[in-house]
Amino acid sequence: MSVVGPVVADLHELTQVADQGIVSKSIVENEHHKIIHFTLASGQELSEHAASVPAVIQIISGSGSVTLAGRQYTASAGKLYYMPAQLKHAVVADDTLVFLLTMFRT
Image (cartoon, rainbow, N blue to C red; front, side, top):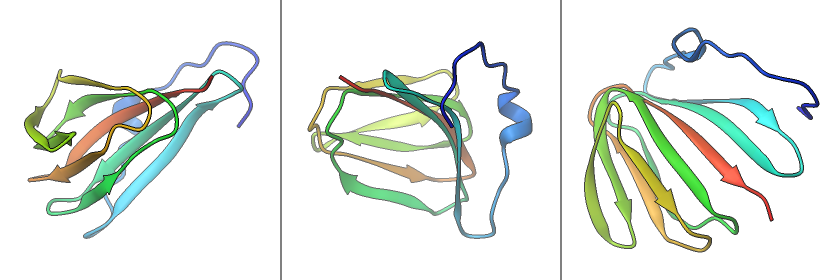
């Protein structure tokens, strides 16, 4: 979705839990950044990987953990995690975990 004008999104309405799954919904995508809304069902995870661009994870609701460069952090509403490009990271949901991922394209 290439966006030219403003975007207004209700992050709670975007939340959709898939039974034992992961739901991702693109909110904004353009040449500068991409914003994706994720919902991870309890017990689901995004295994360790790295992105080619800097990114930010913002936890909206739920609980779990975010691992950055091998160090594990508690994930809960209101937490923000900045990741420079190529940083290995992973996300695990202890219960339904909802977050925004913003990728900054260079």
